[in-house]
Image (tube, rainbow, N blue to C red; front, side, top):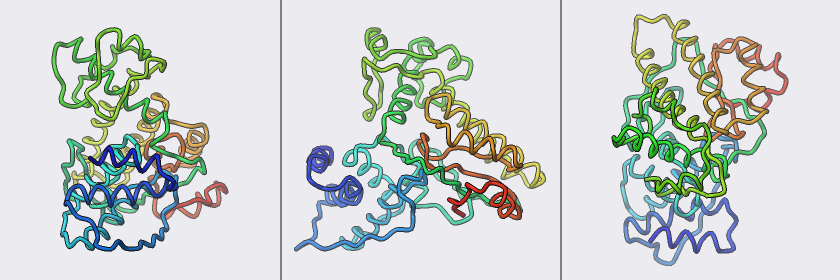
Length: 324
């Protein structure tokens, strides 16, 4: 199985970054019962900053899978490659990520937003930003990794909360974001893993493990899932409404970005550096900003006026790490 192969890779002598392309090769080999005759050599070059929270691992996975699929003579569609990339990251690299980054890397279009409903991979047509606006990335310099404990803790907390909400309501929820907001707000703010397990509960997520010795931010994790889904749906509706003035749409989208950043911090995925950056962006008049990826560092996503980029660069000298 791919999981068993993943254990061999992680126990082997290879540098950790190689787990991603090697995992993709193994995922494709398992999926297609294929292996290259006589082997081959691979050369990898990249302009995507490693550990910057802008899907560098997913970009590497999709690029690797496209090369391996071509070598295998397999014309796979983009969602299929995204699923294989996620499998490689989950089962070989050992990072409990979802599917969003792989789908964005495989299916995204430059300069547009890609609507993704990760249930698990419902894609809609890309959407243009409000006229006169751009999205850029401001790198914090704090290395980010979804394999680190804060991300795994927040993910596990969300599934713990889902189970507690099901017990309280005597109702099953297919997705955490389906939990009513008022029910989410009644969940424990913090809950130790030992107490959760002592209640006879477990989580329905193969990538989450409840540690008896860890305290989990249950309420914040579930509230974030519920509110972020609502913000995303409202944002799509706003972008599709041609009657809304671009400036009005941009300001509202920006406020939702700021709110999203606050939700990340509430469940332990923020960091002081990115908090300071987001506060500076608000002060200097950017429409909005939020920490990206799995949080805990990486890059701040910025929504701003296209003609305001140079002013922000001059006003905020630390904005040298700027990705357009």
